[in-house]
Image (cartoon, rainbow, N blue to C red):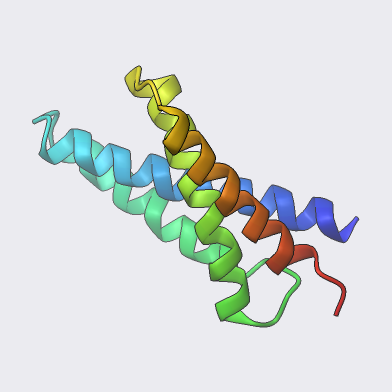
Length: 109
């Protein structure tokens, strides 16, 4: 159950941070307007709160584990939303990051 909670919260955090950053990007760089950027800022703020819901009390561990999910999630987002085609090195790097997430988040302590 603990692993499921870790996983769901990490995925939610990734969705909020990556989506929020993408919305800011769209609002500013793609000139879609300030409402897009403001929505992105709100999503990024919510991301900050999601990390506090993790069961582990160690901020550094939570953010380190999240970092690997962010890497893989960013590539997935790019594929689904932007039509990006990752190469084998992108995929390998993301898998290495996810292996690190597993070690950090799920190692017996």
